[in-house]
Image (tube, rainbow, N blue to C red; front, side, top):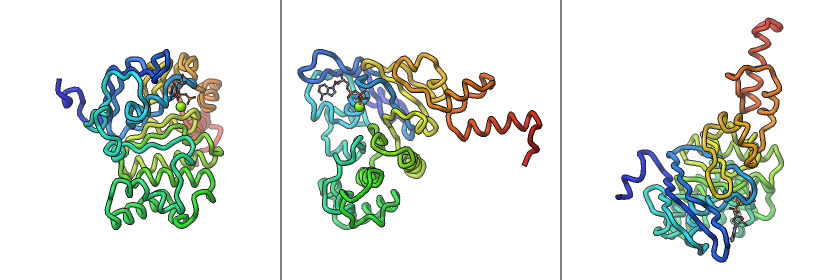
Length: 294
Ligand SMILES: Nc1ncnc2c1ncn2[C@@H]1O[C@H](COP(=O)(O)OP(=O)(O)OP(=O)(O)O)[C@@H](O)[C@H]1O
Ligand SMILES: [Mg+2]
């Protein structure tokens, strides 16, 4: 079968029958995964610790199989390229990867050199590096940090620098593996907004592993739940979060969902954000005529 016929229209990631076992490990970590992602989707990947979330992301950005040896079968096609037979340097222009800890991707003397580092490695001409670094800093709102040393920055600022370095490569796909785990709730919220803005302005496809579903459910098109290396659920946030079974697979119910279940709302009202819940409560109050409409 030709590669094109396996990839649906507007599909940017196509995973078919992917199984993987790390070298020396007894167990398969990914088991016959099928997943299709359309360009421009925001996907949240959820599941228990050890379920295989990070491993799945590594199979998309190419770290698997290029930097981890092991038993690999099946196919991962990213923007038309079969990952297992595409060089990491080429994949890096398609898929940007943000680690949980930004320290892993920040190492140079100044923020702007750091952001340009990936482009330097690719041999992009100096002038273009300058333009792209400026654009990335502007986009992330960190221009004022250009000459600062990365180690002087807060965790939230470091995470923005890491994202700027990745988007300077102009990837079509942005992958974030628990990017808010080191951040306080306020900074984490800011980071999620950054991701949504990047998606809205660049049309970038986003895959994000995040335990705090209350933070990301409202920006997600789909939540995918992984368990023991298999995709157990994949669906719109409302469906997944109000499905009583998903909690069995390590999906923590967001506070909003827990609260909404306690309220006398009908089945049609399934809020997934505090804004939605607030709106629904206001509507109910208005219906009952307790407050006059503003
Ligand atoms: N480099 C590695 N070599 C061998 N086994 C590994 C390696 N990385 C992960 N594993 C194993 O693969 C399984 C899945 O790990 P993975 O890191 O993908 O899970 P995860 O869902 O991302 O978990 P967490 O939520 O804790 O980050 C675990 O059993 C883990 O111990
Ligand atoms: Mg992980």
